[in-house]
Image 1 (cartoon, rainbow, N blue to C red):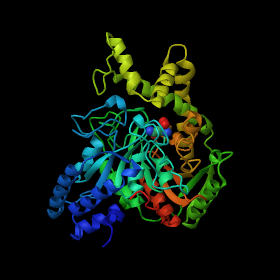
Image 2 (tube, rainbow, N blue to C red):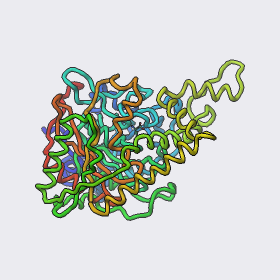
Image 3 (cartoon, protein in one colour):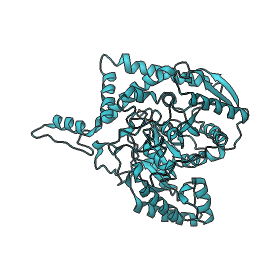
Image 4 (cartoon, helix red, strand yellow):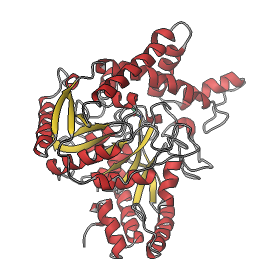
Length: 491
Ligand code: GLN
């Protein structure tokens, strides 16, 4: 008997269509594998009854000839997507007990297509982090280990990547503000896809930095990413930043043909001190692209070195404002000191409810927005953000896609960077620029490092040209032929 958890979404879809399997069977097997993966700490809430209910509905849909790409497919949902009546806390203590009255548009799109929810996935608190060590529910473990040492799954979508790499979901929703889809995908040998800012609705996504936040997907293959992305994308009147553009058939973009495409290699991404293996893999990727008939073009993105400081001003500034709503009155936790007044209640609630990293961001954000510093930090950062976007605009006059490493390292051990915020932030060096410019991008698993840990390459595209990102990703996936799987120590 084939292990149904090892199927890709595309394979399951075809078997469901032929009637060889049912969504109920597929869902039951996945519910068991979710339980078997408890050691990964990827799920912080499980919804097996709901899953079976949705599976039966999906089976009826398929029988009625109404199957879509995601019909009957069991997925995990990052804890920052509002799911009606189900745990939604962005893995923060301050949202204790919060169960929204409404559904996010991204998840509603999935359910409308007949997808099945296995549960809510662990993440860095409010999506702030690169290692999933800031979650109130404890760290997520990467299915991939360095010898006997546990490694972080990356962040902030740690539960999303760990569940998908660990065969405890066929796909997962994720969100990317500065790299939270692409970096953890690279750390876990999964395919991460972040669309153009505005492609997906942010309605019902717990806000971190609203001008950067975008929903996206984690899957085991590029084709699966195309199928799932098509389901979650689309204009929504409930999000004024979502854009009214037709959603292309992303899967149809996977033609395998990139002949004549121009692929840019940004010289500024050759970081001093980057591991030689990552440089070598990047070079290998370039060779694969050439062999597939693409033309390699050296490009410059001169403001790259300012991207990280710019991001770590803009994102905390927006976060400090977005997180002001958690005051002990409207949501979740309320901490009331004896004989205290309203302000004491606010202070006690926020002191008890937010973790250290979130507090750090709120303080940075408040500082850069305060009178006297606003011009020097926030306003300046907004101007630099524009220059970074202009760099990409100019580059994309010459090329169709850009190829870079996804992250400057492979997965690291727990605690390795958690005492040093700057070292942690440096992990986002290759993902943050595209976030600031709102571009679509992916991370494709391409190889293993000397410790046997996965590494990914990042592919960036022009705004609204997700199709080229998928096309190039598909060719990269085929050339890399990344078939390694983690040893299933957690079962
Ligand atoms: N690691 C980055 C941060 O901590 C990006 C997070 C994200 O994309 N949500 O802000």
